[in-house]
Image (tube, rainbow, N blue to C red; front, top):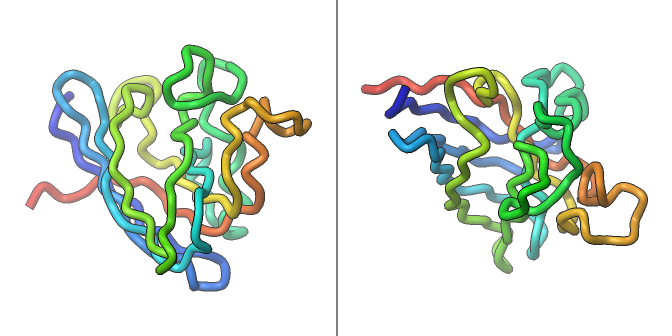
Length: 157
């Protein structure tokens, strides 16, 4: 199914991190993600789709990275990666990150749809599975979850 649109409204636990992201699935299966996140510390932040759309305990209840094929953590361009591994977004000195990316592993329809899951922004840089830390191959050692939102269908009007 092409032309599907979804949105995630991003909030953080202390209400300083805010934003919204739009997801648009193209006819070729690639999903475009665009939006803006504010209230971040300047620099890179891990950016992932997590398995659950559960925010009952804030961003901490969104589960692990979305990983339907049971692979190790990696960069968005790696062959071996979680479907939800979207790398890093970078906030400027004003704490604003403009998000614009396209990925073929995050469809809005089908068996591995990201609808109902959560997008999560982390406090620290994602080492893309290349660090020496014990968490590199599972989370990219990206630190605390500072903002998140559930991905839901968006009206076409």
